[in-house]
Length: 111
Image (tube, rainbow, N blue to C red; front, top):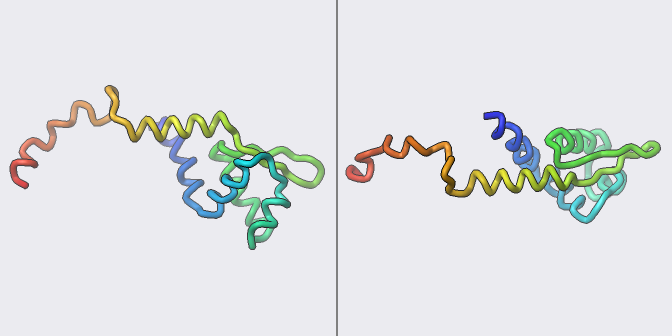
């Protein structure tokens, strides 16, 4: 279960269109919070909230320089999230459904 909890945080964070757009912006490289803020009609505190969520789920890193924070994507965390998505959408020998396939015997016969 911990495996699923770790990675579903990423997808939950990306469930907000503005956060997905911010990640898209960061795909071009590191950006200052002020540059991100220019693209959105939101307050600095709202941007901070979005960035906190993106950093907490692990796909974005922040570094402070002076009074500004610079954000970038954590490519290692993103690779792991991509692999998780591939794993849960692929048929595999160790799938959690193995051993329960017989639970619906007869379902097809009634349909």
